[in-house]
Image (cartoon, rainbow, N blue to C red):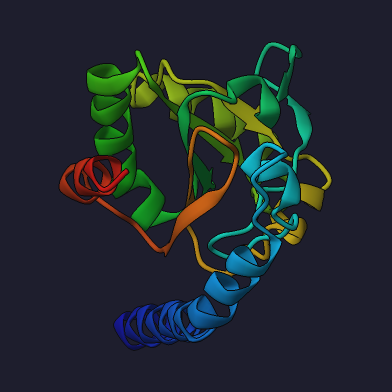
Length: 190
């Protein structure tokens, strides 16, 4: 059983590295795209293509929160957003959540943590609410019941966090768990 767990952890690490390598390899291409579409007469984010790479405008979506209320990503324009994809059974997600909550409490005036539960890959949907209660999560969390948003954002490592600036542009992507210090340094980089 321990051998299986080690094999799974190694596999997760390899997948996370593959995603990281793919994302960083396209960074130069994304910067060129940004430079070519910039315009002085129109708002800068309107000319940036929509996509899930750094430098692209984050695709908008609407999902319901745990109480059934619709939440739209674009509702948070004007604030930095940490868009965090998680599942209740995921050990790295569990390790990351206290950091997400602390960061949200410290910076909620101008920063939003928006949790996206990958409901389509949960073992049991009944585990979601106890998970948020266990960690005392007060930031908004929405349910991706069909997995459409997870698919659109190409989430293959759990958790994955997209850092989106005030204009809706993706500035950083973290496949795998991150901690408070990484979140704070990323915020300060803006």
